[in-house]
Image (cartoon, rainbow, N blue to C red; front, side, top):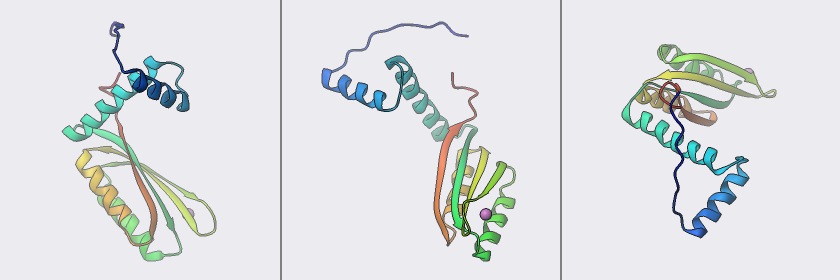
Length: 138
Ligand code: NI
């Protein structure tokens, strides 16, 4: 466990007010925790840019009645099985499915998998949550 350092930051009053409004809306209990999170966000972004091993989740919303679409989603996932840790399928209603694909691996490959899944005709919405393995983030 590394030491905790305290340091002061000089900020324009208007900018600080904006920051306080932002962190209040996001339910941070204090500025320090909000600031730590901002730093972590930048560190995770850097991991993605530098091609380190990362983790994340791809979510997809689609209509399962389109059989061709279901086959494509399955085929693509089999081709990327080294990246995929697990897949959760939720039946949202009679027509719609939510699929969450947990991934770990190279940012480039994860981005490619996400792009391929999201661009399948019939996928209504897709997101990629770009996160971290947590190994190098404190
Ligand atoms: Ni379903």
